[in-house]
Image 1 (tube, rainbow, N blue to C red):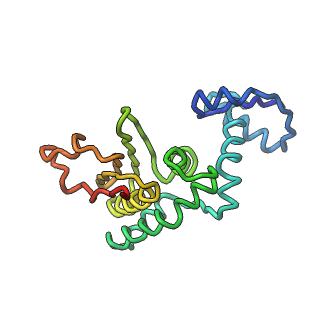
Image 2 (cartoon, rainbow, N blue to C red):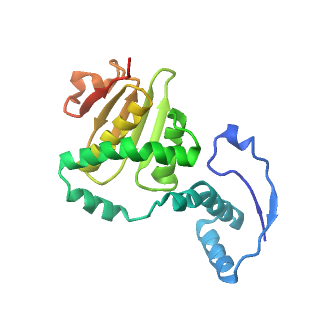
Image 3 (tube, rainbow, N blue to C red):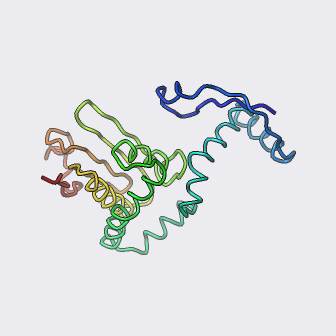
Length: 214
């Protein structure tokens, strides 16, 4: 069976670097059968499913296995946070951002900079890790990063402290806001941002800004 390398979920600039190639694979009959069932149910070609699976393996699974990453359910993680106090969640987030994030990002992308952190958020989010969903935008001056989850305020506090620590490694100032189900990071800090306006009623949401080193 032949599969074409299509470069799924990649920016156009990356897609242009990867020409389609034809490869022939031998599949176990049970795998081929299940693949056909999934393709029919999702109303896509077997080629699309195969490419998606292969990309997940080369982008995520092969590295995650070597790094020691494990998979668990969202309900288990939420239960874990339930046993922590807010301060403990913050302490864990700070430790993770200082000690784990730089290593994970560097291991996966061979460097630790702002672009690789954004890519890591995509990987850890809905694309592969499924710990949360991530969305980001840039208006030419300010990056707005949004992490959404359904694990409660303690998880938001964890992610907030992790983000503060990670951005500190990059020597970037950041305003961080949290709710029970999301984190919003503004970098560099923007005093004119709506969330920084007292009339928006967000003063209780804002974390202290991180400061870039002089």
